[in-house]
Image (cartoon, rainbow, N blue to C red):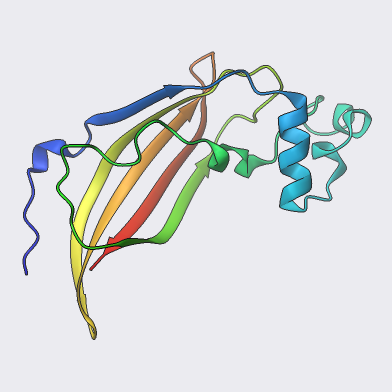
Length: 147
């Protein structure tokens, strides 16, 4: 079945979430749960002598952010159930304690592929994460696959 949708939804922001300031405790808890061993993410003294001169979050810390809406309400259900089809990420400025992060999500692309098991529909959700200075922290492209 061919995938039809209103292409005008591409690039339109459907979620804009401003998060509480990042705490040192959140950063350390994430690094520990992630299994990080690099002391620049775990120890303030080691971080001071590291490349940033201060404690910073593990780059993947931005993955833990969840906005208010995962998908735009206007997007009709593409299939019965979706599954994670991968992520691409571009890291920018490091995340520091006290940073106020904002995540803005858009539908970046919608496409279909036909494989040996049939047609699959893909939705690419792009989330731009910035800090309180408007500096880009991460761009995350999340692909979801629907049958």
